[in-house]
Amino acid sequence: MANKISIVVVSGSRERLQMAAMIASVGAVSGDDVTVFVSMNALRYFRKRATDPAPAEDAFGELLEAKKAPAFKQLFQSAVELGGAKIHPCSMAIDVLGVEPAELEPWLGEPLGLTKFLSDAHGGQVWSF
Amino acid sequence: MAEKIVVDARGSFCPGPLMELIARLKLAQVGDELEVLSTDKGSASDIPDWVRKVGHELLGTREEAGVWHIAIKKTK
Image 1 (cartoon, each protein chain N blue to C red):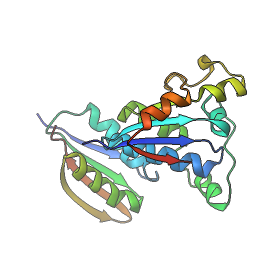
Image 2: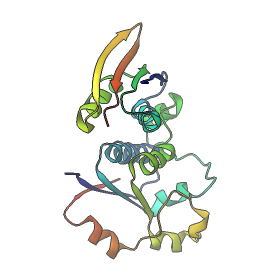
Image 3: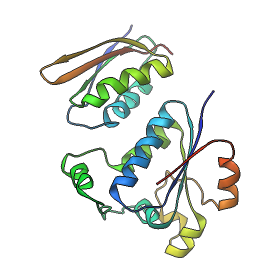
Image 4: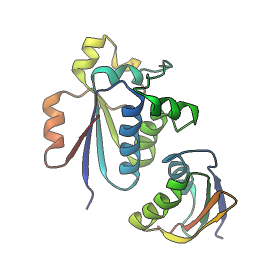
């Protein structure tokens, strides 16, 4: 039976976004039922044409860039397109950031509020980054 | 007729080679054989684990001059 995995991503650091994307993509392509909830500092990187690189927290984040690890956005997109993951922007973060849902990447799902996310996450694993 | 497909993921890091394999696997037919080339040692153990977990057939893994060759057969 598929595991249910809910991933909350709030950090804007390269290392955390990378690890969240790795778990989302590998989980989704392994048959797990993956939902990602994107909020706070993470949301800006999910705008279309967002090219500002997420800052590294420390030396490892620099290595990710230097060694050309797969880009976290590409991995999140693979999670959706290859593994059927659902990635939802947080409706509160959309309002605070002042973006329209249409300005976000087209492979994101509809904005989600916490009530819905919490009821969806019920009974599964929750990971936070 | 079954095809033999090479997925060249050299230079990519985990989980890049796995994602490249799966993207190609989706387009392949049941019975096709795929061989992933990877320079990432983690992928050399992670890809076989994935193949066993989802139920394709692992044909073999070998290393040659710093490149891992992981061969699988699409079974479903």
